[in-house]
Length: 305
Ligand SMILES: C[S@@+](CC[C@H](N)C(=O)[O-])C[C@H]1O[C@@H](n2cnc3c(N)ncnc32)[C@H](O)[C@@H]1O
Image 1 (cartoon, rainbow, N blue to C red):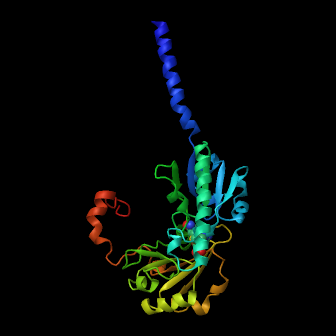
Image 2: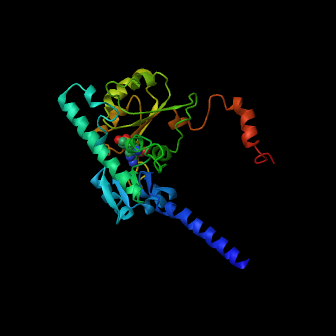
């Protein structure tokens, strides 16, 4: 009887070991939002990064910024330009120059994806590190090119938008008589949701400023927003000792802000009443009272005693 129990236990333990072995060797691909600065990296992001043997970076300079965090890890560069013509068949392009560039970018992308796939198949952990939050204008093509069931996880990060809202201590979705915020960037030829059309809603705007033409944008703003509408630019959002908030209005911005010398690739524009009115609502939230009480209870006794 005892021998039978010992045998059964040994078999169970062996089965457990067998079941665990492949898991222990299972590789993984993380896309990690690094925050706008290392002390805004989440605990989950830091734990994933610690496990990584190999990291994908978009720039050489990232290796310097994150030197302490990536020490000893293999670095693979997945340059920003690898995005060129992603999602477009090179054969559909007009010029040979464009077709060549599209084919070259496609090869670069494929070779990076192959490296990730091979590393993960060998049981290694790979992390694609991105500033802020990957899902806000970050790179996602490598994830999309991998098979659907590829072992992967996206770890959210604190992006420039969240850091900028924190810097101005106001919530962009509250706008007194508006209920939403448009997150946008410069217009590009062929894209259909032109900023000036979005401005017709009069709602608040959060503008990522890649390729940005401040005077042109403010000319459009002045056609749709009262000239005293508050605006703010946040430079180096979230970065201690560097973060800088510049406040102005739709009417005054171009004449009073030195927009040509803002922190390169590190400034975000906020537009809207939310910058002043805070959480105040035109309707006083009265219509939501039943919902609020069901979900959050009443006001309690504070202030009534
Ligand atoms: C390609 S987007 C990447 C955004 C990033 N994924 C994020 O979530 O912050 C780059 C743009 O984000 C904005 N940005 C990035 N870091 C910033 C920072 N620390 N402060 C203000 N704006 C920033 C700038 O408008 C910049 O041109």
